[in-house]
Length: 626
Ligand SMILES: Nc1ncnc2c1ncn2[C@@H]1O[C@H](COP(=O)(O)OP(=O)(O)OP(=O)(O)O)[C@@H](O)[C@H]1O
Image (cartoon, rainbow, N blue to C red; front, top):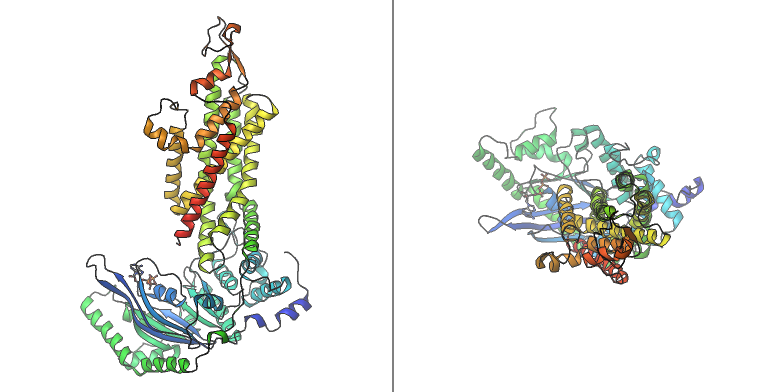
């Protein structure tokens, strides 16, 4: 992957950045875009967008502007053909070159850059583009061409010097906010889309960084004839002037739709003269924003006048004419190109695994902190339960250590939540861009976790097992490792399931902690299975993975070990060895109702629980798209 391109290669493959050049999409138009939701109080339909028309032509940049809540995001999502948010009813006619195209074809012709950067902090800029290429391009695009595209995009977005810099994590500083936004745009251009949608590409950036981002986008759009539609919030004058067209929304209706240089004259003609040296974007937003007006009635009258004037204006009819003209020269869908095919699912899974491994060893939050935490726990356990001798006084201590080890190992899986939520949010965005589905994501997540969890189990066991003096035999040690490993796999799968269901850190944390508390209560240690009341026993005990880990480890410790009774031969557990003043460990197991011949069954149940959690997690990921 680190293979460098020679100068000739770059020349050969990049030429004039040929892959980016749009020679098939002339126009993208929308007519009669309407969106309604049901009003919560009145239950009648409430309009969010009403009758929005517009057209963008090759090489043009359109700014979608309006006060907060005016419908920019809703319109952008409709235009980009993203799944509407729940409860939204949408009607629209969208045409590329005057033709209705299928969703699949539209996906190939367009890309969407999210408002929040969907980037992994542990990757470098170049790796980010490399993985974007691996996940989105079909195998017909060869290795060298991919590298050439990456180099092109790094050059086009002024990122060559940062190519090997990390994006940045909360712990390791990386590139700046503006550079992140450029990386996000560049990674969406890797598939050579013809139409680019940008959701608030300048939000959170200062005016210099905003200008820089939009100018890079403008340069690339002009050079390659791309169509760009960006929602934007109060740009500076310089940034505003980088756009060719403006679609101005207020309360879901059009207030202006036309060339940026004509905005001033248009509002002048309505009697709203823009003072000299005023930021035009700020001026017109203030004009149509009713939110902060002292006199709401006057503000609404003014807004109605602006909206009505637009509907009756010549500019509005010229937009309609432009759309009709584009539709009259309609292409057939087959005349429209677009990158053919996508990456196959096997390549996608391997790429996701590769990416996750890079993240997992570079980002200490993913596993590093957990390894340190578990080692701390192992040393603590090993020194608290230090070198327990095999006397009856220590039987309860052994049982406590077994419970504590299994339960606490499982509990500490909560530390995986932040890392999983970062992966999940990247997945949600990449899925919305049509890169891969939940199955590839889940498989990669599981495969990446396995070696780390095994490493954690080994390090923990090597330290704690021998310090505490559990049954000293190689096979007993490896059985212990197996139980803890299954315990961790189940705990992590539970974290994945719960965090997929409620992808909000604090809520997921509380829910995982609660679930762990539940499993501890009904696992058989705090209340023995025979005495646990029937509700908890039949509803929860039998599906409690911690219960199987606990009984497996109990059998491991007690099935083949004996313990001495007190000096005067008083035995806490009366077993067949009582005459020898000893206790057979099987007596302890009998007390809990644990049989020694069901290890295989318990392992099977544990594996089923792990798979069950993963399958449920997969189902949740299928159903939850946000
Ligand atoms: N699914 C939905 N259900 C109910 N109301 C919705 C839904 N989607 C959008 N809205 C409402 O539609 C209006 C426009 O929302 P939208 O997010 O498109 O505005 P915006 O211009 O992008 O705002 P901002 O600049 O603050 O992000 C808001 O009042 C919002 O509450």
